[in-house]
Image 1 (cartoon, rainbow, N blue to C red):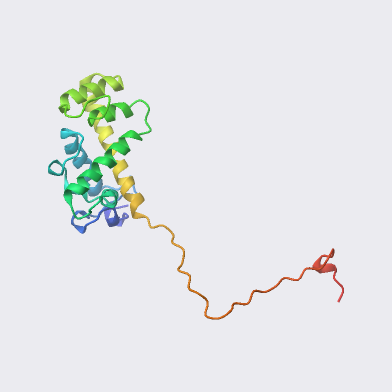
Image 2 (image 1 turned 90 degrees about the vertical axis):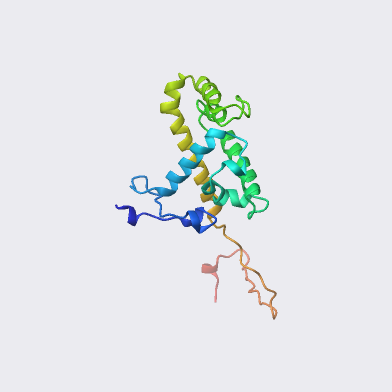
Length: 195
């Protein structure tokens, strides 16, 4: 299947500015610009670590639906940056991989690391938490953790994209509504009643 036939999902983003065609539902799709943009943005975010500041974050992350939905003022970049910071902290706290979750948290500057540490020190702490040598961690494990965090952000955006079923609006009846009464025969089934 070619990239043109794949599913496109523009609703993951708040604005149309960052809405390239993507193949979010097809892992074999050759063209994945949305995923690649988010992965690259998470990679750049990693350099500074958490907390997220409005000056050091890509617009592609600020435009994710989940971030916009959590922002106090969706039109304000600082509010979106604060929402992204909270989203990242929540996603990193809930990572389900027992071996690499502490490493991912340390890599982004959460405990076991401290905020404000540079990437080299955070990487060393993350490698130690994962039980790997630093160079192996940087080359083999870190890219997978970045990709995992990016996928979690995209999944979070997808959860905010899906509409929830809403009950229909009920209006008052303009006239009395008849309610059919059921008649029950005592002790007899309907098939054995005599006529």
